[in-house]
Length: 349
Ligand code: NAD
Ligand code: DAU
Image 1 (cartoon, protein in one colour):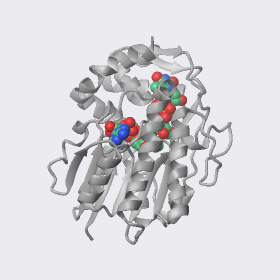
Image 2 (tube, helix red, strand yellow):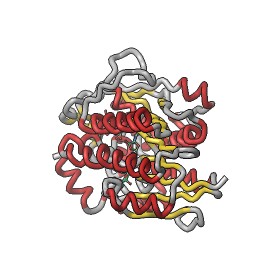
Image 3 (tube, protein in one colour):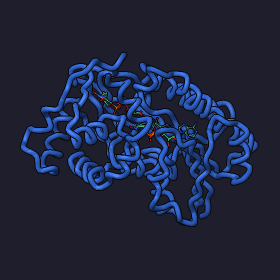
Image 4 (cartoon, protein in one colour):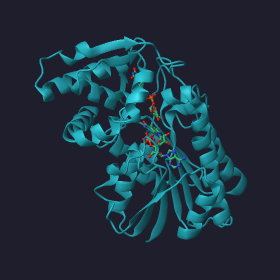
């Protein structure tokens, strides 16, 4: 079956893996990647598939109503997979407005243009919104986020994502828009921008620079390999019922300190360093304001209803990730040059 699919944010970390999966798995689909190429967007992420006949890149802003309208008129999309967002919690603390603009206004722009272009005839259409487990707030030592956990966002980032989730569901409830939402835990893997914990530490271990651990390092995250998130997105896009929500997670909880220590051990071996050498770089720094204590996802609905499960263990995924960063020195150098240095100096002064 042929389909025209709009993927927003396809030049970013997760988006690039989703674009690659759809372009290669579905040669009959036309995949249009709409991305503004902010500091987080990088067309290098898609070098291997950019020449494919079923792939098109469109440079633009999801919050630009005229541009988004012209794009929908040009392609008459059957489906939207919406990933474009400002995604870094620390940046949301210093600049909340850009998160409101892209994550809230940008999402409502896409929803409204889709509704108007589809003229309320939604047969065969789908609007799939990619969200985060952070909308559920912070857990104590026990329990898991399920699809019915009440929203309780704590950071400007998660508040903006929660707001966008509410708008998506409101368009379903009010206009009958065929929407699906998924809320995923922390991703890691190739092409992850090195402002986030794992790639930042890989880069710093490599360069023997301090590894900044916020607070005591006892906050807990549930890590999922990015390619397994892309597989889940494929399964959900094709099989979920309209109006449904799915949680996606790795069932893989680590404190930040244990995770960074483990990463140090993996990299010591790869780099031929003495055991324990890189862990000496660990440096405790001022905690993130309002730092959520623990996230943990229950993905049993997705596993039981749609048959998804992760394809790699964390140990395998982390090794693949470290290997990718060590083999892609040029990619890393390109993204840490220029603005990244200014950001790093301000964040970790
Ligand atoms: P990212 O920051 O790596 O990429 C975001 C992409 O969106 C970039 O390519 C950027 O250029 C683009 N973009 C930003 N503003 C735009 C705009 N106004 N118009 C068009 N494009 C714009 O983000 P990511 O980590 O790949 O996350 C992708 C999505 O998945 C986000 O919606 C995020 O909330 C969600 N998510 C991320 C994680 C994670 O661990 N990274 C986990 C769960 C959910
Ligand atoms: O849970 C899903 C979310 O995961 C996504 O929605 C976000 O887009 C994504 O950025 C990620 O958010 P986190 O804030 O959990 O990820 P980050 O990599 O920034 O931080 C992971 C943990 O490590 C967190 O507890 C903060 C801590 N940390 C982070 C950085 C950058 C440090 O201790 N030191 C650091 O330098």
